[in-house]
Amino acid sequence: MSDQSLTIALSKGRIFEETLPLLAAAGIVPAEEPEKSRKLIIGTNHDNIRLVIVRATDVPTYVQYGAADFGIAGKDVLIEHGGDGLYQPLDLQIAQCRMMVAVRKGFDYAAASQPGSRLRIATKYPDIAAEHFAAKGVHVDIIKLYGSMELAPLVGLSDAIVDLVSTGNTLKANDLEAVEHIVDISSRLVVNKAALKTKHALIEPIIRAFAGVVQAEGA
Ligand code: PRT
Ligand code: MG
Image (cartoon, rainbow, N blue to C red; front, side, top):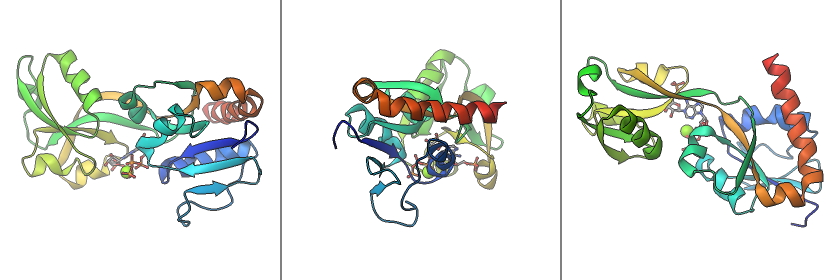
């Protein structure tokens, strides 16, 4: 698309839902609901603004390479991605949750996580997990999974998991318990660094509108 148009990368699900009010504050209304449509490119009420619907973990990649001018991604995804080529001007404080270590109920985590000990960790977040346990002096074998991490300790694939927790219901339903908090997570606005310069007049008012909503909700 031309320099006078904008492509916004969003993922379906919780981030999309919580992004709609932000877009509305910036005067942007999607032409279709991604949850109901199979289209991957969705128009808006502005001829020059479109949304692309990608996997949550792929948002930083689309923005990094300029295939999208900006997007919204969880801090979990951004830490693992590394943030290259991305400007992160705003914590949107949506899709909030906590990155935690969890184990089977009754597992003696305090004893098993002494400095010098060794643990098997299943996670979608190998960098975050490795850094956390390195800081504790615990050796880890990391098993990379792409979903349903909660299953791993139940079937003996791992001693513990590193995963996101919001209500805690998933842990509870699977007889697991959170034993350590690693980092608070929320979603961030990520902007392509080049687009921020070349499309400043288009992007800046949107950032300002988003910031206004965040401030109003925090007040
Ligand atoms: O689902 P899909 O495989 O397509 O991709 P995704 O899981 O990356 O996307 P999505 O939409 O589920 O999550 C997008 C972003 O939402 C994540 O990158 C986080 O930044 C944020 N977020 C906020 C969460 C949660 N809360 C959350 N609870 N992402 C995932 N979860 C999962 C968690 O992994 C666990 O399985 O929900 C389960 C726990 O929830 P509770 O409420 O039972 O504690
Ligand atoms: Mg999911």
